[in-house]
Image 1 (cartoon, rainbow, N blue to C red):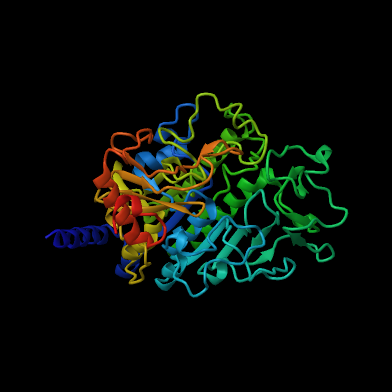
Image 2 (tube, rainbow, N blue to C red):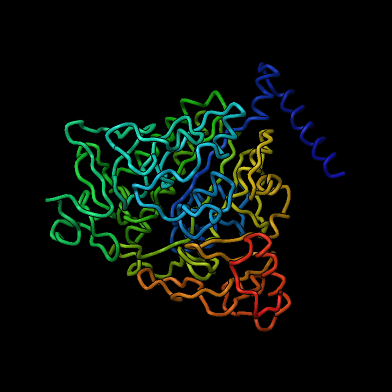
Length: 518
């Protein structure tokens, strides 16, 4: 009965659109209805509480808020992992990152971790006639592990479905500190070749560890290798001086690339994966935004990112395609303050809570590691609402395949198109979450975290990791901050969730003996 209603409703929408075509041919309108543009706006380390639409009171994010107020704001939207590379792998492939042992935080020299024969979001769109592009942070590896940065680098984004790519290879704090367009380093002087090494420095090259007098940003932990623009990085780099980016200009460079792409492809359906670098370290706001937040560089780059989003949305509107574009806004994992540099993120935090009401943060199995801002916006099609449906970035591939009529499906994603369009609040019932090779289960309103050895707190970043020698069980309806462990009080519920976890994750990832499951 419900299926018949949907078909009739969609038919009615299509018929009305034809009546108002005003000179457009039937085929042109059919194309618009069945092939909307799709834009992913993917933030880097933005927390659940970093957006005013999600409760932030100390910082204003009007353009993110505009998406939230005009679309579906999910309160239970998840990144697949509490760290970046695994989430980026999952959002593009629709697969759990723990299925790929290489889906961990990668060095800048790592080989491509997406198999070129693998199904991806851009491949799915290409098969339906879309043009596809990635602009911004990649961090999924390039080449086969021995990259010559002075030649065309591949395989990379272009070999896994993207027609166009303008990226940084890894992260802003890792070498190589250059942009690549379709596999070619931009601005490279052939007489000054690039050399990269993550094990040993090149003779005569200064480092953050040995040459603190050359630094304009001091390192706290893990960021004391090659110095670029006065900022110490992870890894060693020599050469490529003319190709090196200017950190303060990065947001503008990526934004202009994204805007130019939209303008050039506005007459045909396109998929744009716009992967911003903010608020990941090093936080280097353009002087236009420096000091504007009152919370130091971390707050400033959030304001900068919000402005970029506004500019991107304005471009869609100015080009006349906003009402034919589905926008998905989310973040790759939860927040972190001190993630390797002294930049006043802790000292100037004030009353701001990047994690919102949640516990943990980046690297953590607690909720703030993976529950992130998650918004879908489609002017004129999606009606504004707040949804409690559980959704995950892994579900985007299957859901969008259903949207454009593709038969392609990933093994772990679910088709939650109705939820993304605000027509249903059912959502997922279960989801295995990941943080640095550890996994836990979200099932309905419950979270089950198996026992894990290791420190309870990452001392470098001062974030609780979720490790405990005991099972942890939390009722998120009653305890969103995960303060009351109910494992002892609710043994039957714990057993139920462990069995569900095993059915998805497989045997050998949790000790079931104390639960008498076998």
